[in-house]
Length: 162
Ligand SMILES: [Cu+2]
Image 1 (cartoon, rainbow, N blue to C red):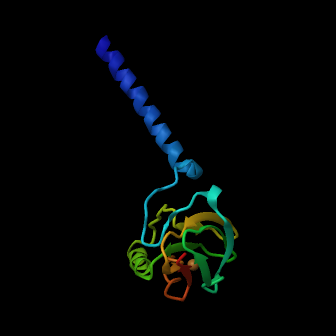
Image 2 (image 1 turned 120 degrees about the vertical axis):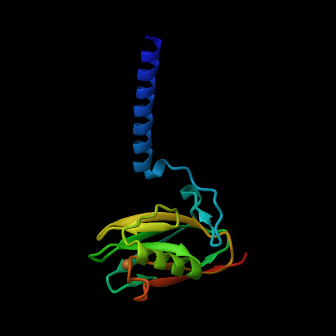
Image 3 (image 1 turned 135 degrees about the vertical axis):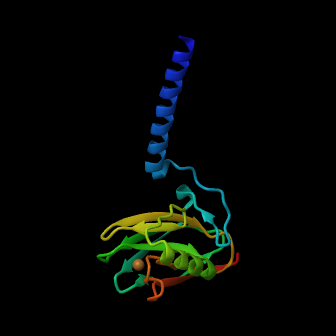
């Protein structure tokens, strides 16, 4: 009798856990802001964004603008619009990161990453990404949909030291 109750209780809590998990993975905005520092900065707090940059991605395999200058420490809200007919994405990183990532995408085309420095944008849609550029230097953004980066879908961010 007691054992049976325990089993039922376990089954219920398991179902609850599974539900909570599904819920969390579908609510992107509920995710806490990552504190992870990368070589090119960290996820930005939308409340601290001091600047909004509109970025357009087209089927001509170009970002507009393709060059950007920001100040070290600045938190930028990117409003990334896909004005094309196919999927595009804006991935921030160092040139080495982007090249490695592009290679990986070629081997695993279906692979999707949910990272704070990536905005996947469906045709006709706009997605927002907030990033804080904590380090000075030259960084890039690329579209890593297979073939796009190679076709020149890449932009440059210059982060000027304070
Ligand atoms: Cu693209």
